[in-house]
Image 1: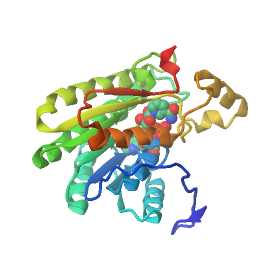
Image 2: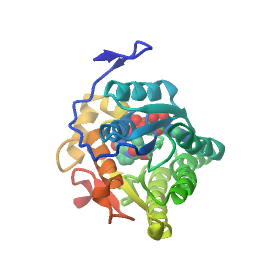
Image 3: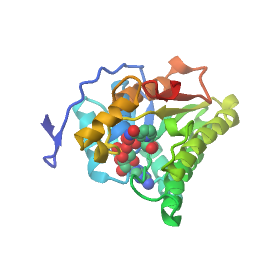
Length: 267
Ligand SMILES: NC(=O)c1ccc[n+]([C@@H]2O[C@H](COP(=O)([O-])OP(=O)(O)OC[C@H]3O[C@@H](n4cnc5c(N)ncnc54)[C@H](O)[C@@H]3O)[C@@H](O)[C@H]2O)c1
């Protein structure tokens, strides 16, 4: 454990990260203050990309920046509510202003509304505005820069609930299905312009989003048992796929929705 300038304890990552040779390239990650987004920001940094760390949570975002600095990487925090068109525009402009370009974007910010009734108007509207409109706004602004540059790669975070239902969360399920639709749209729209667009569909992953459930040991056992592999996934297990999808190793992959769920949707 190390301390950041605010004195907050930061757990160092023990994951092995692959270097895809992204030196000189720039990655933008939304929802990067923790969980999957933070793991992806660190994985981009391990590949030597400069990273714009974006989130509504400033303290967490600055911790991510500090973790990247400890790795010897380059990163900067940008506050952004992805449901706000002006803030999304400013976020993409900040990547170009501070790092000179934008090569990779991981549109990952999302909310789960755990325990809330998504049939209530406000909860439904919030789910759509963050999980679906937020991804569209990000793609719209990022693609403009990437088109000017002659290409790029975008990865959106869907969910296994992007391909399956769940009886509790109409908003989450609908928005995550919608993210796959947006991904396929973007892949076709920009296929000839050199922008690849893919999605990751995580299963049940141990992050702050699922922490209210895993805090209860009995519930954690239930969650582990829901996945055929018998355990929840780690954020790093999503991050490694995200960086690979952005890398030149995935140069013919576009419009793909990659399930990373320990076998949950194989049953
Ligand atoms: N954890 C899981 O089991 C799981 C499974 C499938 C999909 N996902 C998806 O993965 C993504 C990341 O989730 P996570 O599990 O890392 O959860 P998390 O809560 O740790 O991360 C989500 C991040 O998004 C940020 N955020 C929320 N609203 C925002 C907004 N309007 N603008 C900008 N940032 C905002 C939060 O501050 C947070 O840092 C989400 O899209 C989520 O739906 C998670």
